Image (cartoon, rainbow, N blue to C red; front, side):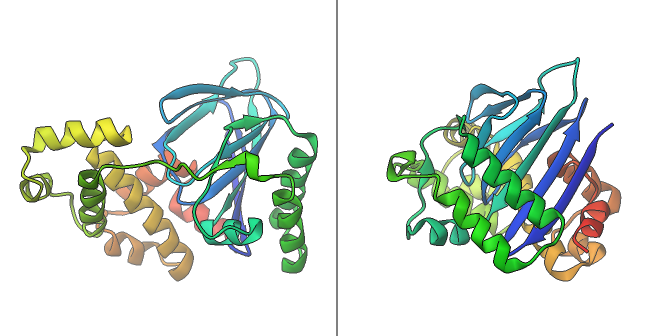
Amino acid sequence: MEKFIYKNRIGITTLSAKIEKFAYKKHAHEEYALGVTLNGIQKYSLEGSSLKSYRNDVMLFNPEELHDGQAGSKEESLDYVMLYIKPKLFLEAIGEKEIVKFSSSIVYNEKLKQDIINLSSTILYEKDEALCNELLLNIVDNFTSKDFTLDYKKETLLVKRAKEMIYYELDDVLNLDEISKQLNLSKFQFIRIFKANTGVTPYQFFLNCKLIHAKKYLELTKDIYATIVEYGFTDLSHFNRHFKRVYGVTAYKYLLSLF
């Protein structure tokens, strides 16, 4: 049985999940994500590398890192918790101003594991925000400067410009002809170059960005149909289909979990 429970507090979203056959479509988050595999095996690709997280392992994801995910064993379900922490909040907590990157993707650290579980439980049970802030500090205090690198993903100017152009089209359909024309490329050249630099096609990037912003808009307005209109989804079925592939639940169920 698949189970996804989301809760949000102090700018942190917690996910408690149990999956057997469900597989996440390749996507990225704008937040830092820290998680613990509680049972089973988490199998996923991250920026082109195949990884497995076993019980009690801590998973660390940087903002905009492409990944998918599924249970890595047919014999047992995968249970895990994740914390999605907004970059501004995370950087403030660790005392950095510029975006940093985790040096490792999977670590075994008993204290860090327990600190992540403690904050996840506190958010899931909607306890005091002051306690949440203190528990976040407990988490970041596990890291030292050697656990981060400033050598963040470098992109070509062409890809940066293309991303900016795609961002402007999130409430519409992706116009490959117009973007490639402005970049003095054929649309097929553009697709190849973009995928070689990012690991996804322009359409996959466009759809992932659309879902990230639609999720934020949904959290703000609590209005599914306004979100559908704002971000140009055809209808509720179309929105839910894409939303569930990335977040495991329909937009309506996600919205209910926020209350």
